[in-house]
Length: 254
Ligand SMILES: [Zn+2]
Ligand SMILES: [Zn+2]
Ligand SMILES: [Zn+2]
Image (cartoon, rainbow, N blue to C red):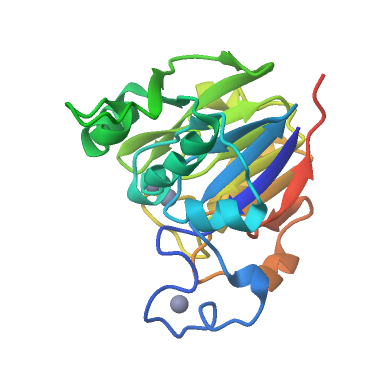
């Protein structure tokens, strides 16, 4: 199973419009961050986690030729606003793409993007996406996907564990029952927004404190703001590093 970090940035992207700070004016390509999302590839199938605002650009950059399923973590704009770009994949492979998410996430998506889930009255347009509510582990293309409930400020979000890999974007707390779902990871990709605390996201110190008990082999901090320079990852504890767009790694599957 191959994982690609399509986007490692917070909701504004980095650089942020109008900003000339140290992060936004960095010449290091690893500090250029599109909105957070991730691709899991396994036996010819492509599973997208979130349809970020930058989906089209990310798909062109990484040469993604099909999307077989989408897992939605939550319905914040930076994670869903690229949903319209899924049309292009459907036009090519003509398959209705299953979209997995919590009841609350799907409810918001169905209200905001009705045209892509439902047939247009009399227009001849057919549904391109099919909502699939998740309330526990499920099988997808020979992989077991485990939804991991997370706290994201005053709202809930889902992380996803697939084999020895887990993706926990957008969270500021991992509830005890979810910690139990995250043992024995090879790679954990987790929210680590910025250096200073934030009410809805783990900041770097909090992300490290929350994940140390899980002892993943490798922990990658993502959803990074313009506060963070990739090169400063050298100060992180052993086993921790910053994400960057286009980063890939392989996960052993049984
Ligand atoms: Zn976000
Ligand atoms: Zn900036
Ligand atoms: Zn969010």
